[in-house]
Amino acid sequence: MTQSRIVWLDWTVDRTVRALLWSARRLPYGARLSLMGAIMRGLGAANGYRARAEENLELIFPDMPAARRREIARAVLDNFGRTAIENYSPREQLARAARWQPHGPGFAACEEARAAGRPILFVSGHFGNHQAIRAALNLRGYAVGGLWRPFNNPYSNAHYAASIEAVGGTAFSRDRRGLAAFVKNLRDGGQGALLIDQYFSDGADLDFMGQPARTALSAAEMALKYDALLVPVYGERLANGLDFDIHLEAPLPHTDPETMTQALNDSLAARVRACPEQWLWVHRRWKSAGGQRRQQAD
Image (cartoon, rainbow, N blue to C red; front, side, top):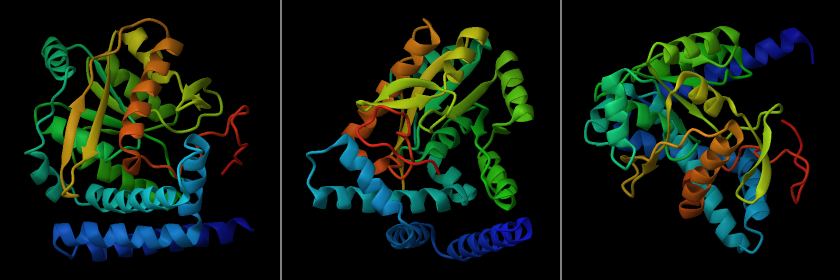
C-alpha cells in the first residue's frame, strides 16, 4: 500500500471516529454510554476483536465453557465502548467523579506523600476505566498526568491527548520528549499514571495470569530512582454502568525492578480473575515465546 493511500485511510478513519463521538455526545449521558457499548459489541464481532478476546480467554481459562467466553468477550467490548465515550465526555465524567471517593489501604499513604512533596506513580491496567481514577484524584487536589502510547493513526493523537488532559494533569506521550517530561514531573515531586498491561518487546518476561508476558520495568525503575510511591490503583465499573469504585492498594515496597513489576502484574491479575468482564482481553498481551499458543504480532 502506498504512503498516500495509508495517509488517506488514516484521515478517513479518524474523521469517522470523530463523527461518531460527536453524534454520541448529543445524547444524554446514560444513553450515549449504552449506544457506544452496543456499537462496540457489533464492531467487535465484525472486526475480529471478539474472536481475539475469546482466544485469549481460552489461553488463560482453558476449562471455561465457550458460552461463558463469548459472554465475557461481549461484556469486554461493551465496557470498551463505554470507556471511549466517557473519556470524550469530560464535563459529565468529572461531575460524576465528584461522588467517587478514592479509598483503600494506599489512599492515606498517597495523601501523606502528596503533602510531603514526594512523587507518586499510580499504576493500573486497561481495567474498568483507568481515566476515572485520574478524574477522581485530580478533583481532590492531585495533578495526575497520564503516560500514553501514541496511536498508529497520527490524526487521532491530538484529540486523544486532549481527552486525557481534560480531566486534569498533563498527557505525556511515550516518546523521547514525553518520557523526559514525565520523568521531570516525578523528579519535581509530581504524580503520574501509567498502564502496565501492554506488550513491550524489550520488556522482561514476567508472569501474567500464568503465562509469560513481556512487561516494561519502567514504572518500578522510576519509582526506585526518584523514591516515588508505587501504588496499584483501579477504577472498577459499578453495576449501574455509569460509576466507578476507585481503590488504591497499598504502596509496593521498594526492592528491585523485576520483583516490583511482578507484584504489579499479580495485583492486576487478581482483579482480572475476580472480574474478567472489565479487562481489555482484545490486547495481544501474550506474544512471548513459551505460552500455550504463539500469538502473532499486530
